[in-house]
Image (tube, rainbow over all chains, first blue to last red):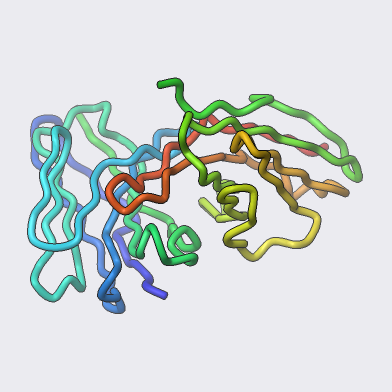
Amino acid sequence: LAKTTQPISMDSYEGQEVNITCSHNNIATNDYITWYQQFPSQGPRFIIQGYKTKVTNEVASLFIPADRKSSTLSLPRVSLSDTAVYYCLVGDPVMDSNYQLIWGAGTKLIIKP
Amino acid sequence: KAGVTQTPRYLIKTRGQQVTLSCSPISGHRSVSWYQQTPGQGLQFLFEYFSETQRNKGNFPGRFSGRQFSNSRSEMNVSTLELGDSALYLCASSTRDRAHNEQFFGPGTRLTVL
């Protein structure tokens, strides 16, 4: 069962690029890496998912090195509204019945003006 | 498409009572998962239902149970409520398809046990 490690909290400023790294040393061959964002009193929201190398969508990029033992969520030009908790999940979202079990504490990102 | 809906949004109960929460997934999604979120414990997985069958279960006591209907709507029941059951209960739906497997969360039900 893959376990993830993320920083508890991070601060940054509006307009900056923010990189949040997640460690997952025991990632399995069929595991994907998924990031969610959560605002207070709301359910988490899917941000991005990847398996290897780099994935980019309209809100973020996900960088995954060749050994896949870590991944970095990159948020370009953050704004105050990006203040939230960010969760990294690792698992096979189709076959792995344990995929949803461990969310961890996530990274609390605070964006300052 | 309409998003995941949960009812009720807020609930106040007393210790010893039971409660039933409801979740309607996104149309076409056959997987429904339930989570408990508290400030101290974070997001904890309760169980997942897929095509009316419980597919996976987290580490919660038997007081927590659920079911899924043929239209994929799901209910979660907590019996003999305890103070520690006060939490935000989140429901998430998914296709569990490899190409589109992200979970879509509802707004949650805030349960307060007095």
